[in-house]
Length: 349
Image (tube, rainbow, N blue to C red; front, side, top):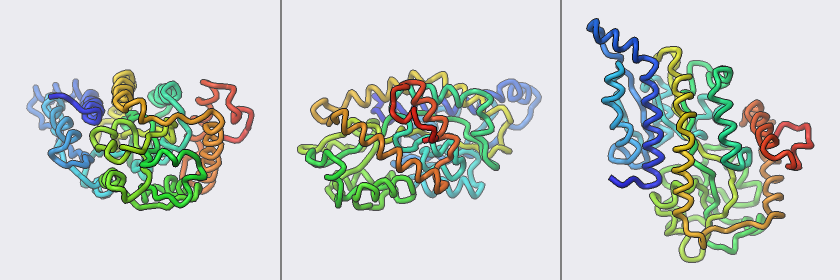
């Protein structure tokens, strides 16, 4: 089977999920030899297409591997990410796979890793993930009864426009933007530039963009082909080559339903596969025709950086973002490029 960019990303995530079983290998083998029962655990899988979609299909493919290691995962497909999150919160699922933005309600720190403008590129993201894979980071990835057991990059989030003439902040005023209405950060950003929020979710934003119900949308490159965003971009639109934020997928567990070592093992496995993730992202970006990309002048990029910084600070002040995550990502940005103007400031942003 030939994998689309999205399903290749899904395949990577599924491979990481296998790591959930690894800490149990010795225990499970011993239990099997002694006739012990297999550990039964439920896994809520968000897939916009449902049980016939690529995400669910690939996660389902690793079930035999998990079973050999002592875990029988009972999978449930969700086309509505909100419902998946609610069922997990209600205890109906032992594990769940969600986008980083949706994961914020279970871990404010990890949910702040998609903060706007906080991760400008691959090098910064690699340093961030290397840092978070260390055992010392474990307290940051545990909040209440939940543990973030894996974080996988999905690539930079870009602005998609149906009209190349919308190429400045001023041109955004009054324009309709498909906005994740449950994400306070996105809503604030859209309103900050004077655009109009059109409430959307991960299942319907592409349709709204493609049929002209909105003027703009935002998504990573891995969504361009599978969600047919080229239908909205063609013939007069563009994809703006500027990272608004960096999307990720997160695997979250009910801590008390898995061995203590499970979370750290998955984090380490995820870190080992970062190169694979970046190859998938690079291929997806390469599939977008060069003439579709809109490259911003350096002076415009600097202004966007300042604008996103201002919004980030307000979201930290209001408790939407975790200040520790924002501080860490600033330190990483300045380590990669100490010449950034923000690095002279003592403000953690």
